[in-house]
Amino acid sequence: MSADVYDVIVIGAGPVGENVADRAVQGGLTAVIVEAELVGGECSYWACMPTKALLRDAAALRAARSLPGAAAAITGELDTAAVLERRDRFAAHWHDDGQVSWLEGAGIALVRGHGRLLGERTVAVTGPDGGTTVLQARHAVVVATGTSPAVPPIPGLADAKPWTSRAAVSAERIPERLAIIGGGVVGAELATAYSAFGTAVTLIARDGLLPRVEPFAAEQVASALAADGVRLLVGAEPVEVSREEDGSVRIALADGGIVRADEVLVATGRRANTGDIGLEAVGLAPGAWLTVDETLRVVDETGTPVAGGGLYATGDVNGRALLTHQGKYQARAAGDVIAARAVGGDVDDAPWGRHAATADHLAVPRVIFTHPEIASVGHTLASATAAGLRVRPVEYDLGAVAGASLHADGYTGRVGMLIDEDAGTIVGFTAVGPDTAELVHAATVAVAGQVPLERLWHAVPAYPTMSELWLRLLETAGSETRVRTRSTHQLVTSDR
Image (cartoon, rainbow, N blue to C red):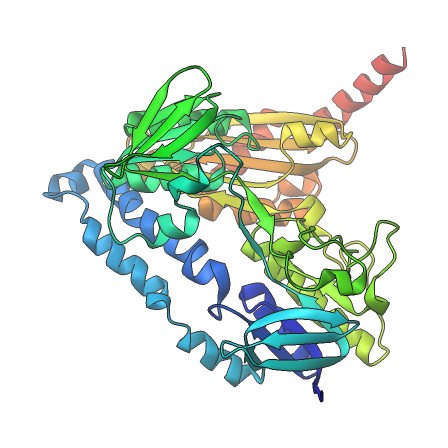
């Protein structure tokens, strides 16, 4: 069977795959993308964009109600139908014509169907009509297939036909009662959205609410959810789920409690979409997360590149940082390094080099769009401690910052940073409060740039803005001289 030949084959046409192909083409190579669903991927239709559209109207309404003059002008409640219509627009009504047009304009070929590896640099695509197209890559195959919701093996859960994030985000009707299993980001955001629609939400968080963020941030979100009417069951464990004759859902808990709802949403994590992409043809286990080196080449357990060094994995599928913006960052590095290797060019894979995804380890920014928002980058105190760093946490009441008090009456929030006592830099930052999302990039620059504390004193925040939090954090931490003196004293004491 003859094969169509390209320099680069990308399996998966989400934002990550699109960016890999685009960078390869900009580097002078030819590229083809293989996609079985919609071009644009999870983020465009069932995640980043539509979820934020579901959340934004309620956030804007809360913001207006926190100002007396604006609150006086509000005469109605949230128009749920209008929110859903706006969500549909941001999801392009689940049509990918615009994304396909972008591929064409960028000079990227598209083959629709399910792609499977046949061996090194070879992919077979089974099209919607059942026909097969074989693609051959001169230089690289990139796996950008993303992840899918993981449904835990709770007895009866699968038979109850639970919602996953896709169903919850694209729902055409709003249930009166919604049970959510899982207290992570997806569960917390959708609890925020559906409670604003008037749904009675029960959030079952066996491992706690947002367990991977700083506790002060998770606690504020928990308080806000409770104030919004969400029933939060921390530590509760579902042991059986059933769909009743009347269509409702019954969830039995380990402590004997019963939760009843009209729908149940499973938000308990993700699994890699690698179960049926032919990994066995290159010596890897189907269904596995793909381990990569710093230039995103897939490697085996010894760190040796597989498939002759011609197989890459970008985005969620490599498990490094399951965030769209981080996947696009990886995609830029991968596309560029593939182009460089194709012509025998120099590869800059040193830490923070052009072809290295260093930020995946040290400077990953995240925003959780709950009420209130949580914006963070880098380490939490728990992860820094686990990494062996000697850090000092510094916190400040965000509501006491002039810009925040102007932003909303009774503004409640908190901000914290982690100082690496040995390096004299910031290695972690977290802010919780209304509209903190736009604060995270300044922190990302400080963490990724490893900006010394003494230089941060010269980054003067404009007054009166919420960014004045940086001055307050530095003041709380003390001057650079005091930081270094304290650090030295601790070292001497430890030596004794």
